[in-house]
Length: 177
Image 1 (cartoon, rainbow, N blue to C red):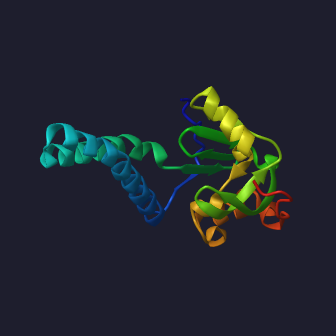
Image 2: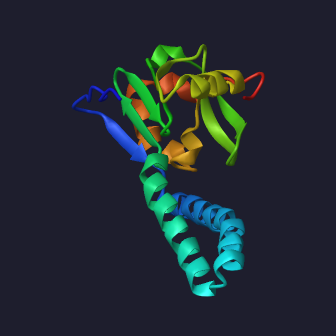
Image 3: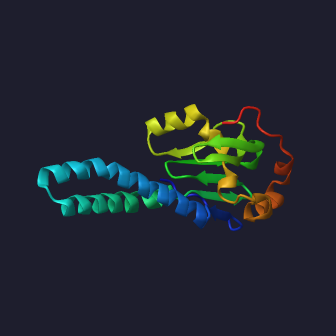
């Protein structure tokens, strides 16, 4: 994966601890539920509840620690433009590529986002991921509300006022992604 070229004035924003905790709890619940059918099979075959319980714990910890770091989105803002790095793909663009500002519906819910005029995928984990992202229009969406719900008054708002003050005057998107 290419390393982003940093700018001396670059602002790097990650999701809040509250959002990360909620995401991790959802991941933990999913991993436990996914392990239960296999644990039941182990219990039926080996007649040992202890082994089945240890399997659930080992399975959950393995996947939780393995996927945890991969799902920490980062937003980088600089005078040159912005970079959105949610994990399996990266979007990089200049400020001039931002076309609209408004709410969009994403898997995590409705969030305030920048809409790009066209897709700007910089890096993708694999081709099936690229096709999925482009089909859903996620290559044109930078969800700034995921990082700071009140972004206008936080680090993101300061960066916009400094490098792209016209963003505050953008119209909402016509067709939300």
